[in-house]
Length: 167
Image (cartoon, rainbow, N blue to C red; front, side, top):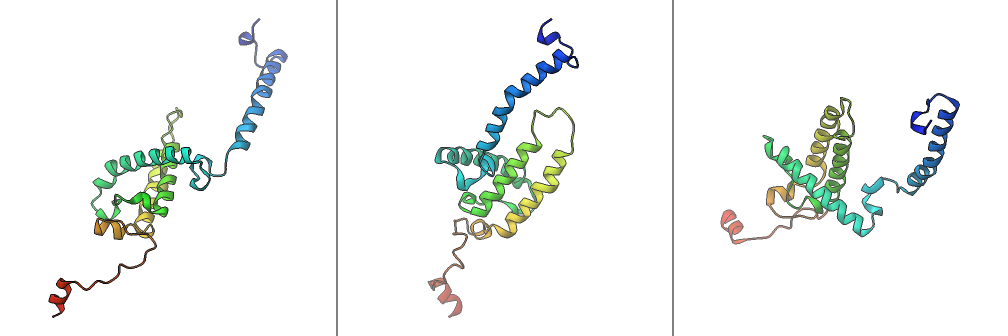
C-alpha cells in the first residue's frame, strides 16, 4: 500500500502526515522569521531593487484606481494629481489600499465572502476621504503643478496683473 492509499486516520497514515508536517515546519518558521515588519510593503526597509518593483506595482494600481473609480466620480476633488508619488502620505495610504485590494480580491479563495464589500466600505472610501483631507494634494491638483507637501503657502508675488487690479 502506497502513501496515497493510506487511511489518513490509521497509525501509518498519521505517521506519514506527521513526517510531512515535520518536513515543512522548519521552512515555514524560516520564512516567518526572515520577513521584515510590514512585509514587502514597508518602504523604509526595502532594498533599492524591491522599492523599484513596489513603485512599479503601486503605479499600476494607481492607474487602475484612477481609471476605474476616480475619473468616474462626480466630485473632482478626489482625483489624484500627477505628482501623487511625491506626497509621502499619499504613497503610504495608496500602498495600504493596494495591499488591502490584493487581499480582498485574492483569486485563490474559492468561497464567497464579504471581503469585496469590506474593501470598498472599510478601505477604499475611507482612504479616498483621508487622501482628500490630509495628503496635501489639493494645491497640486488645483494648480496643475507640484507643491512640496510641507512647503507652506505659496509666496506672494507682486505682478503687473495684481498692480492693475489694486490700482
